[in-house]
Length: 361
Ligand SMILES: *Cc1c(COP(=O)(O)O)cnc(C)c1O
Image (cartoon, rainbow, N blue to C red; front, side):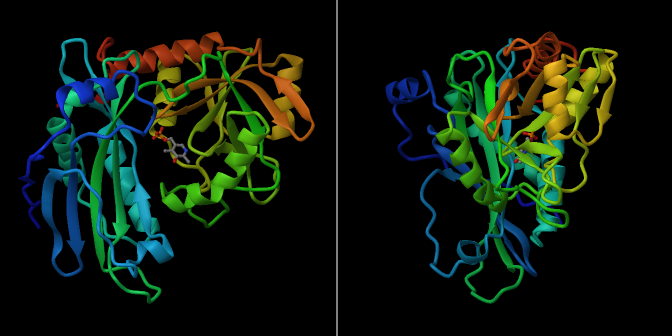
């Protein structure tokens, strides 16, 4: 099946230059959107069709659209960076395309040919490159997603889907100037169970995690950290970021991908960059009690969370019930800083790209 060509329908009345300039001067994460979106439709029997770059606008959905009832929805998140020479680049977009289809398989949805996913993302960037925010750490955040668009209340995998890409100019994810984030350990709620959807990037995982995230905020923390569903003992991840632990011998630990953790592309890149730096990385289960004991003994020197949106974010403090512990000096540690710098330098084209991660547009 040949990939459909994109019809390009420019916005008839794009946002005025001065309004856009004001909007992207200091964008809050996920609140500012560009003029266009990409849409491709899938119908069983016909395949993918109606590929369009079109004016961004509301979707009209029948109240019986399947996604509104059974939540068949998946998404991706990636950034387009501006390199020092002014060109735009994507980071590991092939990995996003592959993971999107892994999520689609788990949710019994139609798979999108990887080259079509990549072409759609490139179309979105090309249509709205002038929305790139002129701020430190700025990027165009791309949100490809797909939902069951069939109008039917029977419980089954849908036979129609809509895939979209929307674009949001972003600055730094965490607005506070604090040197590190604080975490709340959720003991009442889990994010994913064996056999469940924890490894799929689906909206449903987020829906289930929001109550715990709200609890974390209410208790004065930035993010929630989830433990495993079976024993409530092993550290899994945050609502939308993977975790790393750094020890006094310079080695790192990150929880293994056993099906309940989202296989982060940033996580994978950090493992590779740590190896490149001569560090040992163990993908092994790490217990919450051990984390506290190691932080208190000084064996654990740093912890950080990572993901596309927030890049690499040091963890300064962890609270579990009535007890809290501090990681290192409570700020950003050296290994965290080094790995973040190596990652960001590759993403922004300031360092060599030995693993072929950067795609220029
Ligand atoms: C997207 C996501 C991550 C981070 O993945 P990246 O590919 O690094 O952006 C981590 N955990 C969850 C639950 C996620 O949805």
